[in-house]
Image (cartoon, rainbow over all chains, first blue to last red; front, side, top):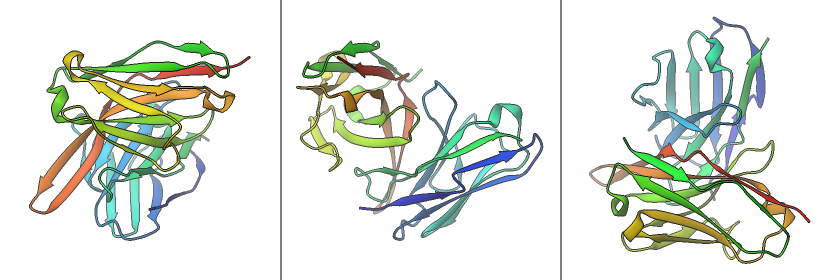
Length: 108
Length: 125
């Protein structure tokens, strides 16, 4: 099984801050990595697929990078609506999927 | 608009059976895998399994194999998640999601989009 870890598990930030979340895979997964945003009481929403491709309709302040085992989600200027929990997910094993444990972003 | 609509919240007793549903619309239901994801209260996302409604090919996470059954009825564009004997530890929000697959040569990228709104299952005596 491919295990996913995320750091930090939570962070506090202010509106306008640059925020970086890291995801690490237990083995190389090339660019088979997706990012989701989940707000309280809502279903997850796709932000980034294939490590760095921005999903249609997602603001350009979100970006993804990385390959192999180490990946990053960056929010260039945090907005009030971005306070949420963020999950990475590997799709190296197309039909055997693993999510990371999540990173909660809250207001400082 | 591609949409997945899940059945409503359920309150059950331990030992009871349950089947929840996920109805797809706005796309060819038989051409995309549908996955199920569990989220226990205050916890993260756990992938449970996935089904291809076109031929009912089904794969399970080892953690959920034998604990739940995933099925689909392509005639009504609906996928299902069922339990034969619920436990208190099955209390959770359950999401369905469509698996989008992009291929380039030998390589396949996949991601979940869209997601259903979730079905809250509460198991309590």
